[in-house]
Structure formats: structure tokens, C-alpha cells
Amino acid sequence: MSDVRPIRKILIANRGEIAVRVIRSCRELGIRSVAVFSDADRTALHVRMADEAYHIGPAASTESYLDLDRIVETVRVSGADAVHPGYGFLSENVDFAEACERAGIVFIGPASDSIRAMGDKTTARSLMKRAGVPMAPGSLETVQDANEAAQIALDIGYPVLIKASAGGGGKGMRVVEEKQQLSSLLQAAQREALAAFGDGRVFIEKYIVQPRHIEFQIIADKYGNTIHLFERECSIQRRYQKVIEEAPSTIMTPDLRERMGKAAIETARSCGYVGAGTVEFLVDAERNFYFMEMNTRLQVEHPVTEWITGLDLVAAQIRVAEGRPLPWKQEDLTINGHSIQSRIYAEDPANNFLPGPGKLVRHQAPDGPGVRVDAGVEQGDEVPIYYDPMISKLTVWGRTRPEAIERMKRALSEYEIAGVPTTIPFCRFVMEHEAFTSGIFSTHFVDDHFDGSALQTKDDPLREALALTASELWRGDLSESAVGNNSFQEPVSLWRTIRPRRK
Picture 1 (cartoon, one colour):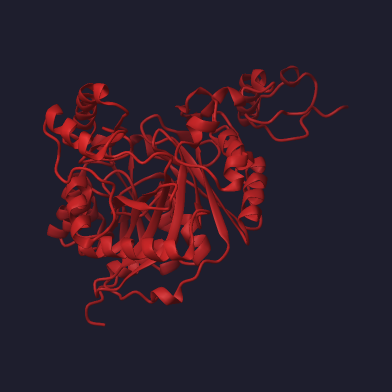
Picture 2 (picture 1 turned 60 degrees about the vertical axis):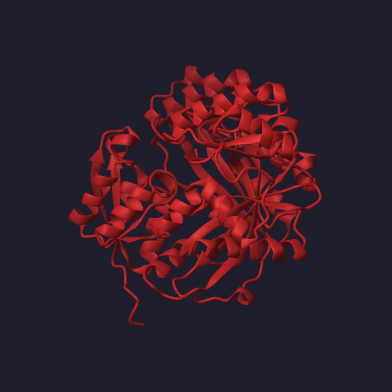
């Protein structure tokens, strides 16, 4: 095909587990990989795995992974002909996509115009109205002052949601229950949006009570072919950030899936989208769905879609970026089994998920049938203070949802980490909670069901001692006195009691 431009070398403008993930697909496709690294990541796993690696600056992301000029120059120096942005950092940065386009570098993602259209939520809402995609009632334009906000809220009814136009991740977002709160919360949202995104614009929409967060994976080629790869449920969240994801969703019916899938495809077509992306919706208790936003990149939770479809989404991204047509039609795709993902962060769920970066003195990932671990670190590596504290993504597959839940419980029980707190106890809590196992829950799961004190078990006094013991084991200087003249029957873990073996 004359329009196909084979890619021979890809620079991965990211770090951690997603950089490792892209490197692996590159290797299987026979494409050379180029890593970039900051001072903090000089010995990181993605640097060790790549075919080539280049230093791009200090530990601070603003001076390294977010320095688009430096990354574009590194592409030139390395001889790479394409860039994969991963997610986060520059993945949805319009200026970066445009810089790649000007330099003749293949950006493995959508065109800058699509990123711009979907990156501004008010612009996206206008596009959805024209495309006929359902949206929560609210403003199509940004709100200028409290008087205008009060009129919109009166028209659509309380509670309402104030949202930042230029960003996401819960920044610049406030729930307003009654009129008296509106003015102060509007100002707070505008200040937070300005600080987080350099853009204080906000808009207002109806707040959906007890919603489910459902997203559809789409992929489109440059020849007008757009398909969806079914849905993912992402309702288990803390601070508007996902922790547990699964596919398919327990709320879905065949009719709802068909209607939401068509809406996701229309969303992509409305902005001329090419590449892999995700259309996010909220679904209410009556199974009405509303467009929330489109993420113009690969999602953190893409492995659950890969499990149930058998497809390599990174490889598909690369092939579309080369100018190849999609090799599948919608009718070719089916859902096979059930998949669940647990995000393993260096955070303390018993202390409001407070980040706890540090050295992984023990990191033994689970294995076995139906288990996949995407990690960006190994034992002895640091979880740096400068970046997102993700350690890995633990994903499982089962023939049914109950089987997948049991497999996740087994995998979590095998996961051994010491040196940092982790979200493993929270993930186990979710897998064992009746609301999750029954499939009847919402985005308020944490507020409704989780109290960090529930994780303060009788083993907690051992945490510090276990971390010290693991550290001594790592250094090789564990003395008999340190373990009370006992050896251990089980490996060191911060969240599981270590039982001494009798002599």
C-alpha cells in the first residue's frame, strides 16, 4: 500500500511501566526502541530494556519528561522516526503533537486538531451536541461569573458539578449541593483549575448521583474505519483516580452496549479521530448514559481490553500510525471471558492513600495461569518522589467474573512487597466486599464502603519491623537477634503476618 510508512525506530516519551509495555510490543514487531530518562531514572527498568537510551534532564518532570523541545531534539539525535507518548506527561499535549508534525516525526496518536478539540471540554460538549451523543444537562460554554452560574444551576437543578474546561483528574472539580455553596465553590474550582492547568475556565453540568463510570475503547484508521473494543468499568476510584478496572461491566446489557458503542464511535468521528482512544461515560441508576470526556491516548487500564479481545493495542496503534488500515471489522470482535485490573501504587490506603515513595527492598510479583503484571520497577529499584507512585498493574483473566475475582484474590495474596506501603490491602478489600462481588456499586464505593481504619489490623505493629527485616535481608546483614533466633517460613511482606518457623 503506497500510503504505508513503515516505522523502524520509536522513541518512547515516557517512563515506568508504560515505557516497558511499549518496548515489548516494539520488540515483537521488530522495531528498535529508544528510551529517555531523567536523573532519577538513570538505572530504571525501561532504560535497561530499551535498545538505546538518552538522558533528557533533571528529576523534575518539567525539566525532563515534559520538556517537549528536548524530547523532539532527542528524536532527531537518535534517528527515531516515530514517538509513542504513552499516557500522562505529553500524551495529550497539543504543542507536542504539533511539534512532531512540523518535524516530520510520526506521532503515535491522533492529529493535534483532534487532541485540541477533545482537550477542551466545552469544545467537546459542543461537538457531542452536533453528533447527537447524550450529555448531562449543563452549559456548552464556560461560565464567567456567579450570577451566570446560578442561573444555569437553577435551570438544570441541584446538585450540579463545576468542572475545569482544560483538564481532568478531579482538578478544578466541585460538587454543589445547594445555592448557598455555589459562589465560593465556583471560585475555588477556578483557582484550582488555573493552578493545575494554567487555565481557570470552568463549566457546569448536572451532577449524576451514584453513577457508574463506563468507558469504551475505540480505534480508528485514516481510511474512515472506526470500531470499538467494548467497555471497561472504572467506578472504583479514590480522589477521582481509578484503582480497580474490569471488562466487561456488570451493568451492561446487549442493547446498552450497542448504543454506547455507537455513541463512542460517533464521538471519535466528530473530531476526525485516528488512532486508539477512549470515550468515557457516566451511567445512572436507570441506565441512561452521558458523555463525560474523550481521552486521546492509550489508557492505563488497556490490559483488561487486551485480555477479553486477544488484541495488542500498542501494536495496533503502531500499525495505524504507519498508515495501515484496521485489520478487523466490528463484527469480527467478541468478548472472551472477564478481566480485572488492580493498580498497585506506593500509597497507604489506611492513611487516605498518602503516597509513600521509597526503595523496593522486596518485590516478588505473582504469576501463574491468567495473571499478567505490567511493572516499571524491579526489586532494589526506587519508587521516586517526583512521579506517579505506581509500582505495577496486576491484571487477571477468568472465564467468568467470579473466576476472575478469585484469581485476583489469589494473585494479590502472592504479591510480596516490602519497603513501601501499597494499595494491595485496599485491592483485597474490594475483591472481598459484597458490593463489588454483587456488581452493585458506584463511583462512590470508597466513600460508601471503605474506612482506612479497617486495614489497621493486629499485624500493623509489625510493619516497621518487617520493613527493617526486609532491608537487612536485602543488604545481606540480617543477624540472629533481628529475627529472634528464628528463620522465616514465608517471604517478607508488609501486609501479611510473617510466621516464624519452629526449630
